[in-house]
Amino acid sequence: TLPPSMPVFKNSFTVHAELEAVRLFHQTDSDRAFKHLTPPGSSVTIEQPMAVMTEGSVLKFTLWLAGCIPVRWTAVHSEVAPGGFVDTMTEGPVQRWVHRHRFVALDQGNVQVEDHIEYEYGGGLKGLVARMLFNTLSLKALFAWRGYATRRCLRDQKAKAT
Image (cartoon, rainbow, N blue to C red; front, side, top):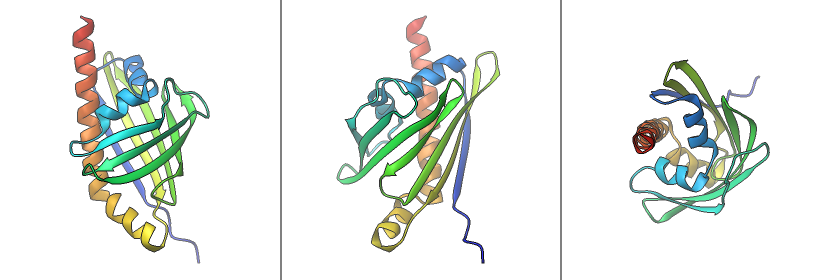
């Protein structure tokens, strides 16, 4: 028999910004970006910051759920380009996590941000906890927040520049 397919989560949203602004928001200053992208009620501590994303760059952080539950995560970045990148979890709460970020210019001043995540929970207690934290509903909520936060940050950034 074939092994069961890995869960896949897909999300997309449109942001009113230039492609370069979207790229810079996601690929520079990880500390600033993560603070904006982390949902209310949680916080993030960056242990190994990433000033500029390059091929092979590593980002290490702890996401604090409800302010008190640490979720440690290490991601290695690949396929870094103006149109997106891939982050692959090398240490963290799930057995496997490959997150493809894609930025697609739609027309003048609008970009579609696409997320495609393949993941495996793993077994045992760690796998059970991962299923509770990273189920489809919680991922939908997280990425709804990230869409809102990205649009807000890029709108505010554009307003400051004018």
